[in-house]
Image 1 (tube, rainbow, N blue to C red):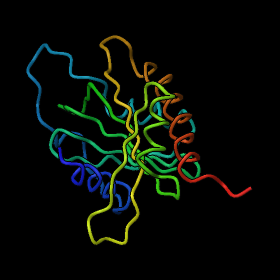
Image 2 (image 1 turned 120 degrees about the vertical axis):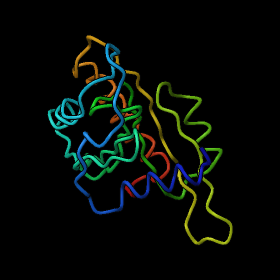
Image 3 (image 1 turned 135 degrees about the vertical axis):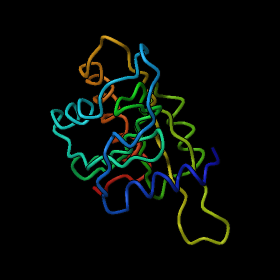
Length: 172
């Protein structure tokens, strides 16, 4: 997927008004194959972690959840969804700031594990600054239930905040 398309999809999920979409609108799975956790269990786990989750927005076999974590807003994309169940997820957040540069983001990546970030250069001729985009992919396992999201949620929250502070440090 082109970088511009990824950033556009993330920006749309973060910025557009929430439209109610039902998980039933997704593709159907072959019988007998584990197809993931129900969307309602995933959103329930996020809510139980103290996060505010928007209504799911479906697009083909993907479902997007806009999540507000205090002042931080990010997107949880649910992939390969069939019949309202999804076997893998991707956390995504984008940050702008004076230190959102390739060098700083590269150094941040070298010093951390699990969550990876990349520099999204602005479109040529655009007044929009470059961004640090963080992503964290998680494969869900059969039999693990929604509790298997607990550790990834905490890892994500910690490292997403860390990247945001790295590229846009608070004035002390």
